[in-house]
Length: 108
Image 1 (cartoon, rainbow, N blue to C red):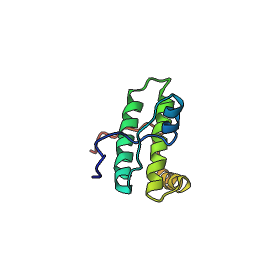
Image 2: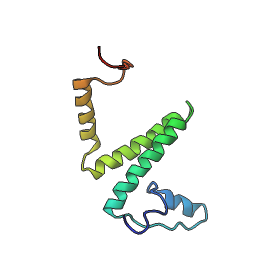
Image 3: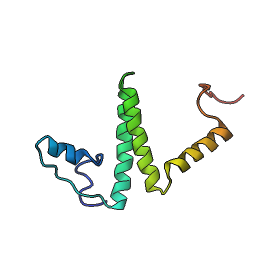
């Protein structure tokens, strides 16, 4: 674990600029590779919880935040969004998606 891992949180790239525009001076640093990976996973948990807690009106925005983190995680793994979509589509073709709302309760 890198030294500052317990303090702060991963934020979108323009957040420091937005903070400056609002008259404050942000204190930031660039995470190393391992810390970045760990913080991306923390951010995914945070965004999923926000999505799960969202009402119908704010859910799409929260889901977009989840997707942004998923894209960053994929990039960190060396997977582009096109490749990620191909992987998703292949899994959907082989195993289905979730469109039919099927719930499995076990076997007989």
